[in-house]
Length: 423
Image 1 (cartoon, rainbow, N blue to C red):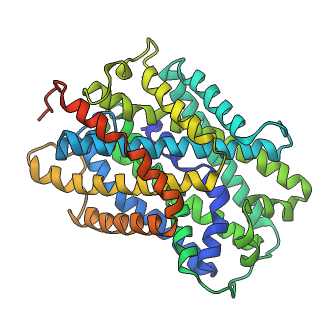
Image 2 (image 1 turned 90 degrees about the vertical axis):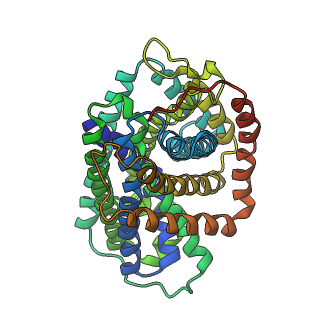
Image 3 (image 1 turned 30 degrees about the vertical axis):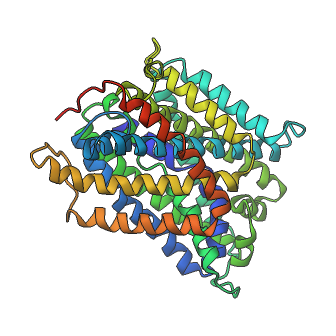
């Protein structure tokens, strides 16, 4: 359970909370609305998570959404879900690496080295680390998540101890496009709450530990995010917060002077490094599970002596490096968001379908008020997917282009002799 909590916190808390408070303030303009938006984001994540937690507790296999949608809808939908999810998580790994490069530049290091090269370098270093063993990766996750949480809570305390400098409103006109951009950024900032479900075969008693770990971590993350934004609003006027690309650094500068930026950038570098570590732990599990089931070439299912899905990891990091070579955070975020929302919508449907298809399946966790949580989450996820694509089709179209190779791979896999699905 400790690993489960660590991997969820590690997967959620990253570069997003350091950058997105400004985007959210730009969209909502009012202190109360801003804090309510962050609280609503946590509550929605909790409701959305009930579908995948019920599935993971009752179908404890690796692969996350892929494994559950394949059980619910069959091979074709399962494969398309897995492909979509793998792309979304790989895009996440790429934009996290880009943010790491930004942090390094802010520290005044490697100033002549392009952002994309630093990002690819981080991916390469962490790949080598993960190839050592799953045990090493697991311990690094526990330690990294603990350090990250302690740093952020200490930062919150320091901001609240400072003299008030914020204000309750911003008179700028509200723009629906800015609100959608804020929601997209907040969605990505809460993304990763399903991280533990990718390791169902690798944790003890997933039926018991998975729900407790996911819900405990989401509670901690929601409190953390609301407090961070309240602390920023305490220190910075909303108009200033809305213009900031790194609000935490601006707040620290107000309190600690020029050294505040250095302190925050060092903190940010540690946080971004740990979340990238998490991302490269669970993303290859999707590809490995599909290959193990015969839906990808068999060599991708190979596992090294250390227990690491080495081939799937290498394929994942190659694509992540290609995406990171763009060096543009906002574009990579726009690619990620529609793919991730679509995956979560399919999981909401899968939870309903599995209840109907396998009524006698043992369910250590059963979502309350079924199927209401799944239906609420499904409605919101579909609405978000449409709004994200419409708001920024120029970048979102790359999501569709990345989906295109799924069709020939699926046609190839249909010619193979696939293992039967377990009952």
